[in-house]
Image (tube, rainbow, N blue to C red; front, side):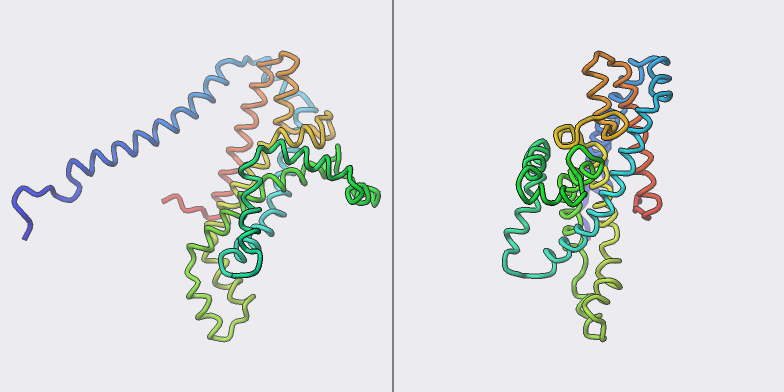
Length: 271
């Protein structure tokens, strides 16, 4: 029997708890909205018209979209393979691989651009480019740089998803006659579905906003290797702050729509 005077479930402590959580959520969301609103209030109609009428900026927007999408597709193959291996298997060098996955997350992205540039000046890198597979100052280089910087986020998210999935269900599938591939495809992968979608979101978002490594490795040639983050840099460098902010709003809009579509078509759980 409950003590007299005991707080009922959902009492004042519970209300305070949820009020604090909602206040923090509202504060974070409000700060992001405030930043975007400040950008929108600063620019004028002429800056927006210039951005929308510029073939170079629209080309940079399209280049940002398709390279980030291709990068995400490639990275997801590695994310699923490495995430599953690190979660389910024990093999020699596992700790080393697990550590190397995190390196691109912890060191500055600019280092990756410099490292790629140096690599393609080595005999191995020059041989690769001599076959006609050019990366330095080329659109292929955008995808390569995006991949090396963003893939680790996808791998880490995929591993977390497989860690949370019940491995016993795969073991049951194996005892019922499934091959390892069949158990992975029919049980393991569907159970980690939401985590794989999270991996895709993290990878695409990181690739789409990449700046430093691209500036070093592929440059910012208008109509060839210029993406939206480098457009913002170029416009700022010549004093066109309003145009740069208008491009920033365009970048926010494209990223927001893309992430929303990933959630909708991926069946993201929002409840």
